[in-house]
Amino acid sequence: MKIKQFKLISFSSEYWKSHDLSLFLDNSDTKDKISRTMKIMEFLRGKIVSGEAKTDSAPGLYILKFCTSSKCVISLIAEVDYDEKGIFIPNEEIHPSKLIAYKRLFDSCRMQINPILTFYDGERPIREIVEPFMQKRPKIEADVNGAKYSLWEVKEPQELQILKNSLLPIDRLYIADGHHRFSVFSESSTKNTGIMVAITDSESIILASCHRIIMQNIAPNWKETIERYCILEKLDIDPDCVNATIIKLRNGEVYRAIFKYNIQENASFHEAIENDIIHSSFGIADMANKVFPLPGVLTINDSSSIFELYHDSSAIIFVPNIEIYEFLNTVKDGKKLPPTSTWFEPKIIDGFAMAKL
Image (cartoon, rainbow, N blue to C red; front, side):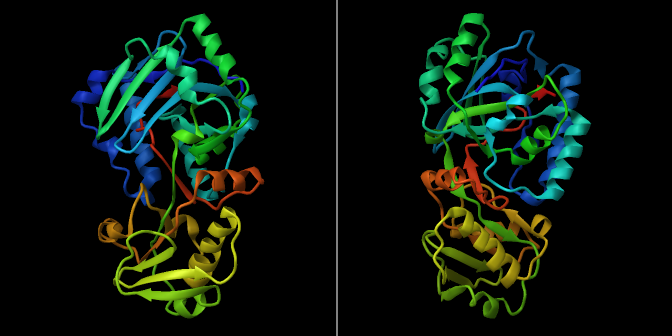
């Protein structure tokens, strides 16, 4: 994989300490994600024009250490040329309507407000590659919403070449976060331009299933329909953990749904949830606008707060987690998961690392 340096646009450490960050942090309600992204892009574009967000004078590569309470991830932020886009492995389908909306956003703003989060498998850990360049003081240090960010810049020609050579053996990058943005870029006819990516390894990524919130009244006969595909077991209390497909209704009813047929691959499992439960049993055809992912690592005990946030919702589908090796085996077989089947963390806050297109 060939990577290249670029001019990063960023705020100073002092900005992240002293300014109201509520616009960046409020990402709990995913049904309004497009409009929220537009607000952030317009806000950041204004900050770039005013000079509060500054563009580096010389291009470089960047090392980001990002620590939350559950994980500490190191990634290399670089650009990958459009003609190298074949190394990206999209592992999920995308909603066409969302792709159109994102295309309008990027055609309007012509900037990336965060890198596409990617990871590779089976090579040297990214920490081993970049650690020699993390001995000096970081360019930016910030504590944002309980997460600690540290960013180092690499600009010396010899150091840049060492990093570039270290990543040459990598020939596949799996997209963890940014499928729609990548699709917009990959369809572009723009030449001599790069895609800003954050590259890490599979051991550094937290993979969780992406649960679903249903924003439409479900079909009255859904129980009769679902029993064509699943054994439906009503539960008296919420289970302690998600070890099966759990359906929680707004009225408090809880059901465990066990598929009657054997599901081998993760792609098939998520297709079964989408087709047999959401579409056929619940009677919901509009997957893009009536079914939304639930952000973060959640439990069934979070149901009350989820229903309060999504006040027009009717049901939550909690999906069992999958292991990273299961995920990779599915993708390596050439299969794609349905839209928003997975949730990768930790996600980099919007605006911390930006680039012009």
